[in-house]
Image (cartoon, rainbow over the protein chains, first blue to last red):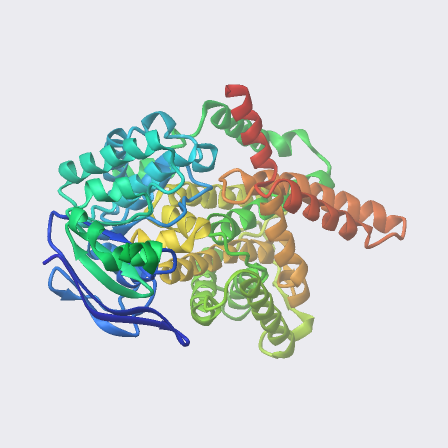
Length: 241
Length: 333
């Protein structure tokens, strides 16, 4: 198992954002995470990525207990992430953004340069290498984030709503890009998504969260029919009908 | 080794007009003392180079690192006093006192960085300011530092490369230019180094930086420590140039703020920013101070800086260099 979360709890004061979450992500798979707003998806990502320290529970990566590790150590062990709503290093060029990621594995600037070139090629960013991310459209900023995360050479890539706010065409493009880089870089993917067509087509297994709890897990088509899931999204009335 | 040298000396990655501009700048500085004969003009030039030197060092934490440090004067003071006291007590040669001053300043910076970087943004800026003020008061209070009376450097009868004492400003001109160039080349290496990239990432977004494997806290502490060491060099120069130092002269709040301001006005986080800022502010500072002082209108110069500062902060956070870059981009389309 590449990633294992065991009975994870995260509480903020009295608010329980994650309650008793357990999950397993197998190497090479694409795992989806869905749920209504406020279900605790991003909190769970933040716990795994070391941004939050879980209140209780354990997180194992490649068999190693990484519970409570700070973000930079989590990144170095091989978990990369993108952020909800896009976060770029706004005063650095696209190339520099990617180079910062590549510096994670080496001190050698020439190696970093070469890797950044390769990754920008892979993600079709080469033409914009010298632009500032803020000058570029949102779809391209998402690709920059993806490139930067890839440059750290992760085993597990966690994407938090990478398709949010994109139009259908852009969504399709990024979906294909993600599939392509997964194959080429032999990645394991764990993604949060609100765009249903996106997550339902790409994921092998989907986990559904609601109100901080995991309420369902399984192949997308099966999960979509579960009354509990429909109830969480649309309310009790529709689930019964 | 070859690559290290290349990283230090090469400006190849910068556009052509920058490299040409830089060459012209070097030529101007080289011939300056042969063209300008007035003592005042030469003094302005030396002060400009001194503040460009200060700015280069401060740019590491303040520009690349994005941490507003308003206490760089303490490091200038450490350098100045290390040189002054060691010369006074033991006749130590100048070139030995410089690294000692740098190590003292870096060590102190490392020590205070540990608690200080628990603070962020404005709170960090205030903390740096307070630490520098405490040191200044200590240097006034202590006897062994000469207290408020300061330190007078014994004057050597003949011009002297061991103690860097000369009769003519021309020597000091090339001396400070040499120190400035070494710092510039160091910064040229730094901006391409892993640490340089890490600092900039931390400046732009700490959360993203951490997600890319950067230890944010450690990066800040290292950057602050190096900045401390760099600041001491100019202090050592001040001691042998002015031959007299006291806490009000080498470690006041005004100095900290002027250093930070030259960089912000010129362009924080760019290699040329500190030079441009010092080229503008130092002559202005000296002429305004003299002119307004003669008219008994002291204080108006400070108002002018304050207004400049506000305009820069509101209109162009990347300073004059930011304006130049934008114009160039526009022209390139």
